[in-house]
Image (cartoon, rainbow, N blue to C red; front, side, top):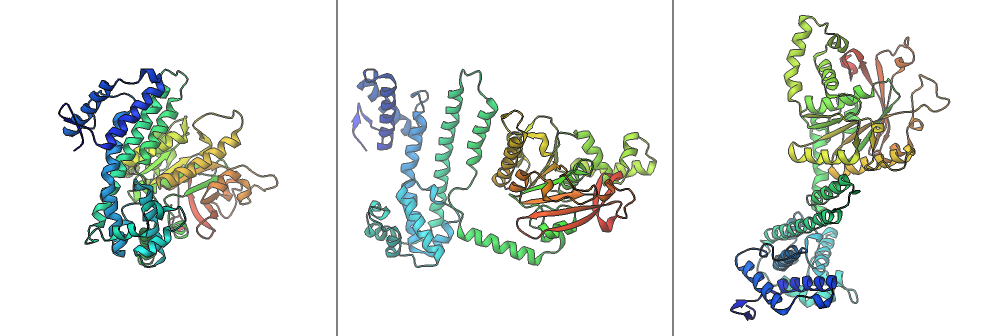
Length: 514
């Protein structure tokens, strides 16, 4: 217990340090002559100690300018040191403890830079399969003026290893380290968000959407794992994928979200999390039908929560097309209301399944990538989300209108942001694009990558070009067929996959069902 003032114990060193920082800020902001008087300092010290005795961070309303957050963070940093030392000691004593700990924490979870360096050295030795001893760890850190000197030499490392009798509780203390780190990040994120709001106060020209997006970035980042990925977890994941691929058959062997087409699934293993797929076609070929088909298969057939974004078709039109595809009742008969009793029965049978499908339909003429990001995060939290389908990329814009008349630059930025979105949220994103016709290409000739906007090809993991000969030549022997030309496949071969186009049912199907 420290010195007493009027019978009250003074705060701990971290609290005193925080108070000193606050006083320094006050003096710098208002001039030294206006700094707090000594009696005010004493009163605040006592208030802090009272708050600590009552289990609170600080008395309500006692401080301005964010001191409460500073004190809270200081306490957490002080409290994290003992669990950090115990975690590192367990790692020094047992490779099994290293394997357990790296599943829980990353280097960024440690408060002290020296602890981060020590953690990194142990993990590097573990990854290389080398012995983990105080001597080998010291060797990893031994550079003149480096981390070993900051820690106190090999003697400190050896003393740390011998400070515990068993490495059996390493994972338990690692959980504490991780939780303390998350709380610190939460406090820091809250202070940054509050700072955004204070900075924008009274500014009539402020972009509120941009502020909300920045705040959401702060909150979302709290859920992203810190530090480098564990070599153990990444190895196990890789082996699990190999095992699943070898043991599964058909749809059960897929790693990603089923596309609805057997040959396309065999080639791509489904739509993969974190990947951007671009599907392009000329107008009138069936882009919207294929987009709905991907979303319908994922949500209705396989129960995978999906988001379909369509600036062009509204919810009623999309739902009608879904019912037509599922019930096999011609879309034009549904629109005209000219259905017989059998058709009505087929529609009635499929309506319950369509209504229960975990498909969110978003129709808006004002869609930005930032709005998509917010909606995806919201759906992930509330319902889960496995697939995003966007029809079409030309209907999107960036957060700011920016560069009037420079549509190419805007499209390039949208493509980059969509690729980033897929990786950020670990979601497969499928975006459709209108495709131009290059000079010299005959009408029925199959398109190739030269017909696609370069910025889309550059950012895509997979590119599929949709083509139908009967859109140009009605008498072609390939009437009713469509080619899905996988022209780019970053993680596998390319191929041309033929499917059947059933325009009257608003769907594409595998050839065996044609």
